[in-house]
Image 1 (cartoon, rainbow, N blue to C red):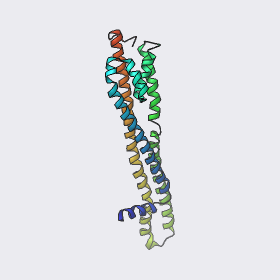
Image 2 (cartoon, rainbow, N blue to C red; image 1 turned 90 degrees about the vertical axis):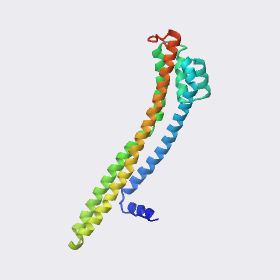
Image 3 (cartoon, helix red, strand yellow; image 1 turned 90 degrees about the horizontal axis):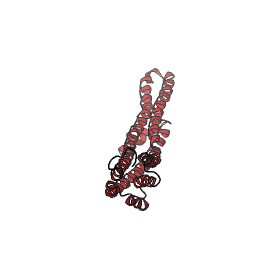
Image 4 (cartoon, helix red, strand yellow; image 1 turned 180 degrees about the horizontal axis):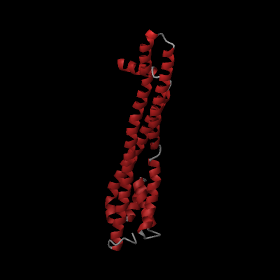
Length: 219
């Protein structure tokens, strides 16, 4: 209970700027949970699809890839199926690559959705903390100017301590948000890299199957 009481007292002594920083913290936590759950789900489904499609990719079995995409609507399988479907109208490797890149870009937008807000929220929390401290110091010095000389030292020290709480809370909010932002960015890059790797493996397999490895012009 002492720990909880310390936190409550810390927030109460932080001034009005504690409230917007607390809102930023709650919003950041909500975005983090939603994004982590979504990215974790996509990553797991892509890894499962890649393990199932590895034999088909190595054998350039385009029929099996399309059938798998019809049953399992994962981003990776849909990307590979998009490239395979492009082969029906064009046998150029570049056309197949463009078709798969289109799907990767489409899902990249979904994967990165709302993640940049975490970095913005971290910056805003830091700035609000500094602003709250400055406002608190201005109010403290204004109060000390009219106080009794014998009370000025204690009054000033206590006022500065209260003002610093805002900066401390702003930093305590910003630092985890920056870390989580980097973590989500890394998870997003891992998903995109897996999709691109699978696409390159498929194009190489198809090139070796139909052109004996000479796939500079056709897939």
